[in-house]
Amino acid sequence: MNTDIMSYFDSRATVRAYSPREIPADLLRSMIEKAVHAPNTGNMQWYSIIITTSAEGKAALSPAHFNQPSVTSAAAVLTFCLDLNRFEQWCRMNAAEPGFENFQSFVAALIDTSLVAQQFCTVAELNGLGTCYLGTTTYNAPQISEILALPERVIPVTTVTVGYPAAEPSGPTWRLPVEAVTHYERYHPASDADVARWYAPIEADSQRFVEENAKQSLAQVFTDVRYPRESAEYFSKVYSDFLAKNRFL
Amino acid sequence: MNTDIMSYFDSRATVRAYSPREIPADLLRSMIEKAVHAPNTGNMQWYSIIITTSAEGKAALSPAHFNQPSVTSAAAVLTFCLDLNRFEQWCRMNAAEPGFENFQSFVAALIDTSLVAQQFCTVAELNGLGTCYLGTTTYNAPQISEILALPERVIPVTTVTVGYPAAEPSGPTWRLPVEAVTHYERYHPASDADVARWYAPIEADSQRFVEENAKQSLAQVFTDVRYPRESAEYFSKVYSDFLAKNRFL
Image (tube, chains in turn orange, purple):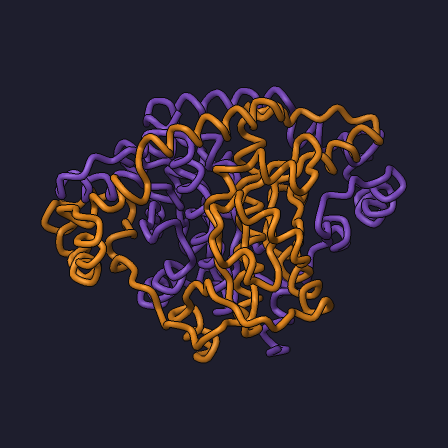
């Protein structure tokens, strides 16, 4: 085991604030070349990456991401999209009738797009860059699609902002103990005592969020403030309508 | 840029045949500890990993993966599941009413589960192991769920078989040129001439698949043999029914 590299995986953290330093174009291209060697279904590469580096482009995307500052401060904003358009074009050019207007094709493409995004982030971080995923991509997919001029059958999945970090990285982020997320041979439901013990460290560290939001527990901060039902239901309809319009549902 | 590590990303390939050598339990655990440092939505860690190392467990899973030999020959079979069960248990223990019974929560959890799977594969391959993703996981999710005793709100997403390679890795797999999958500032639809040029190398290398299957083009091998519409539509219904039963749709 290469200890230096392995310690990177233990200590990485998301970076949301970037220096103004640009990413050399050949480095960005080379990192994407490495990212696309991530595994994918049948080697069909059902994804495209839209790279926004212009100030105007970043400003146009910013509202779709609820003006999170990492969008405009990043050297590059990469919108990872699942893309059936290119593959289906190739099929039709070759007298092959594509049968991908269905949910399984959506799920396969969504997974493959995620894998290439994650391989990109790993490569970028190992090159000294900082990255941040934007989950807002699936909320405002129709708006992002319009800004990026996406054709039919191309769906925004996730966005990665990337740039040189403005400050030293903060060090590893808390995670559940590995026994909380692993099960041997079959799933073993956790007792309430297990769950309480696993979450105790983050609850202790997050008291200020509970107080700031006048809530009774950290869990309520998640359910009532950060990820409220109404918002999730609204954006579920927006995304599934968009998928239906693009013949995935 | 660390050249040694960067060349790994250019040259990695899927490994489907493994030696009988076991993976030390502490190495497997350590690799999963590194994998869970992949980014995830709100640090809610909506995933679980079911680890199958017993011969009986692998034999039970094998038919769900259409008896692909990598399942029984791998030292370990890791079924990556999206898991709302644990987080919702924590919410209910803390007087918080979870609002995650919707499509956005499914999509977020699916992406996060994919990212942790990919980080696991990267760590495993950098430790000299070989990995293979099984896309059959979303086809036979109900069957896999039963074998692994998954509770409600836990959904199989992808499976990774992992073990020491039986032979020297085959070297890098062909990919589309990077310009085929990247777009600057906005999507630029490809001309048929572009698409023909991009796919020419894989078409030339895959003539035997076209002949073996008595097809007219490689694209027809994909649409008619490997990923036929009827199969994708059937398994789309199986997976979406299973998601509906688990209150994600």
